[in-house]
Length: 125
Image 1 (cartoon, rainbow, N blue to C red):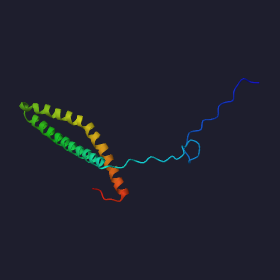
Image 2: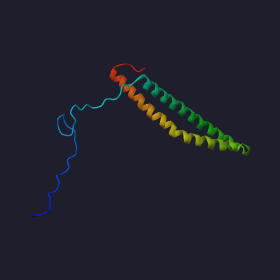
Image 3: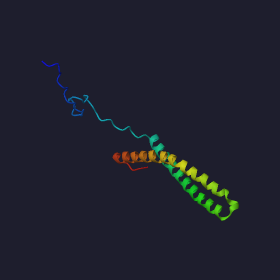
Protein backbone atom coordinates (compact mmCIF):
# COMPACT_ATOMS: atom_id res chain seq x y z
CA UNK A 1 0.00 0.00 0.00
CA UNK A 2 1.03 3.50 -0.69
CA UNK A 3 1.58 6.13 2.00
CA UNK A 4 0.10 8.81 -0.24
CA UNK A 5 -3.22 10.34 0.67
CA UNK A 6 -5.80 11.19 -1.97
CA UNK A 7 -5.83 14.86 -3.08
CA UNK A 8 -8.31 17.14 -1.36
CA UNK A 9 -11.60 17.76 -3.15
CA UNK A 10 -11.61 20.79 -5.47
CA UNK A 11 -12.61 24.09 -3.88
CA UNK A 12 -16.15 25.14 -4.68
CA UNK A 13 -16.72 28.89 -4.47
CA UNK A 14 -19.36 30.14 -2.08
CA UNK A 15 -22.41 31.13 -4.06
CA UNK A 16 -25.56 32.19 -2.27
CA UNK A 17 -28.66 30.36 -3.32
CA UNK A 18 -32.18 29.98 -2.04
CA UNK A 19 -32.86 29.77 1.70
CA UNK A 20 -32.21 26.31 3.00
CA UNK A 21 -29.33 25.69 0.62
CA UNK A 22 -25.83 25.45 2.04
CA UNK A 23 -24.04 28.77 2.48
CA UNK A 24 -27.13 30.95 2.88
CA UNK A 25 -28.37 31.76 6.37
CA UNK A 26 -32.00 30.98 6.95
CA UNK A 27 -34.18 34.08 6.79
CA UNK A 28 -31.61 36.12 4.89
CA UNK A 29 -33.01 39.42 3.64
CA UNK A 30 -31.13 41.94 1.53
CA UNK A 31 -30.35 44.99 3.71
CA UNK A 32 -32.27 48.16 2.87
CA UNK A 33 -30.88 51.64 2.65
CA UNK A 34 -31.70 53.68 5.74
CA UNK A 35 -34.58 56.11 5.41
CA UNK A 36 -33.70 59.59 4.24
CA UNK A 37 -34.31 62.00 7.09
CA UNK A 38 -34.81 65.78 6.93
CA UNK A 39 -31.31 66.17 8.40
CA UNK A 40 -29.88 64.16 5.53
CA UNK A 41 -31.68 66.40 3.03
CA UNK A 42 -30.40 69.49 4.85
CA UNK A 43 -26.79 68.23 4.77
CA UNK A 44 -27.13 67.42 1.05
CA UNK A 45 -28.33 70.96 0.39
CA UNK A 46 -25.56 72.50 2.50
CA UNK A 47 -22.87 70.48 0.73
CA UNK A 48 -24.26 71.37 -2.68
CA UNK A 49 -24.44 75.09 -1.96
CA UNK A 50 -21.00 75.09 -0.32
CA UNK A 51 -19.59 73.54 -3.50
CA UNK A 52 -21.37 76.13 -5.65
CA UNK A 53 -20.08 79.02 -3.53
CA UNK A 54 -16.53 77.68 -3.52
CA UNK A 55 -16.60 77.12 -7.27
CA UNK A 56 -17.79 80.69 -7.77
CA UNK A 57 -15.04 82.03 -5.51
CA UNK A 58 -12.46 80.02 -7.44
CA UNK A 59 -13.76 81.42 -10.74
CA UNK A 60 -13.53 84.97 -9.37
CA UNK A 61 -9.98 84.27 -8.13
CA UNK A 62 -9.01 83.08 -11.61
CA UNK A 63 -10.36 86.24 -13.23
CA UNK A 64 -8.67 88.45 -10.62
CA UNK A 65 -5.36 86.64 -11.13
CA UNK A 66 -5.56 87.28 -14.89
CA UNK A 67 -6.25 90.97 -14.18
CA UNK A 68 -3.24 91.02 -11.84
CA UNK A 69 -1.04 89.51 -14.55
CA UNK A 70 -2.18 92.08 -17.09
CA UNK A 71 -1.54 94.87 -14.59
CA UNK A 72 1.91 93.48 -13.71
CA UNK A 73 2.81 93.25 -17.39
CA UNK A 74 1.93 96.90 -18.08
CA UNK A 75 4.59 98.43 -15.84
CA UNK A 76 7.63 97.10 -13.99
CA UNK A 77 6.65 99.07 -10.89
CA UNK A 78 3.56 96.83 -10.62
CA UNK A 79 5.51 93.56 -10.61
CA UNK A 80 4.06 92.65 -7.21
CA UNK A 81 0.72 91.97 -8.90
CA UNK A 82 2.33 89.05 -10.68
CA UNK A 83 3.23 87.53 -7.33
CA UNK A 84 -0.31 88.10 -6.10
CA UNK A 85 -1.56 86.23 -9.17
CA UNK A 86 0.73 83.32 -8.27
CA UNK A 87 -0.63 83.32 -4.72
CA UNK A 88 -4.17 83.16 -6.11
CA UNK A 89 -3.20 80.23 -8.36
CA UNK A 90 -1.81 78.37 -5.34
CA UNK A 91 -5.07 79.06 -3.53
CA UNK A 92 -7.06 77.75 -6.50
CA UNK A 93 -4.91 74.61 -6.66
CA UNK A 94 -5.38 74.05 -2.94
CA UNK A 95 -9.12 74.59 -3.26
CA UNK A 96 -9.68 71.95 -5.95
CA UNK A 97 -9.54 68.96 -3.55
CA UNK A 98 -11.85 70.77 -1.13
CA UNK A 99 -14.25 71.51 -3.98
CA UNK A 100 -14.24 67.84 -4.95
CA UNK A 101 -14.75 66.81 -1.32
CA UNK A 102 -17.84 68.99 -1.18
CA UNK A 103 -19.28 68.42 -4.65
CA UNK A 104 -19.05 64.64 -4.98
CA UNK A 105 -20.81 63.68 -1.72
CA UNK A 106 -23.29 66.51 -2.19
CA UNK A 107 -24.21 65.30 -5.67
CA UNK A 108 -24.56 61.69 -4.52
CA UNK A 109 -26.70 62.69 -1.57
CA UNK A 110 -28.94 64.88 -3.75
CA UNK A 111 -29.34 62.05 -6.26
CA UNK A 112 -30.31 59.66 -3.49
CA UNK A 113 -32.88 62.15 -2.18
CA UNK A 114 -34.35 62.57 -5.68
CA UNK A 115 -34.54 58.79 -6.19
CA UNK A 116 -36.27 58.33 -2.86
CA UNK A 117 -38.75 61.08 -3.71
CA UNK A 118 -39.41 59.54 -7.10
CA UNK A 119 -40.07 56.11 -5.56
CA UNK A 120 -42.32 57.69 -2.95
CA UNK A 121 -44.23 59.53 -5.67
CA UNK A 122 -43.69 62.99 -4.19
CA UNK A 123 -42.42 66.06 -5.93
CA UNK A 124 -38.92 67.34 -5.10
CA UNK A 125 -38.82 70.27 -2.72
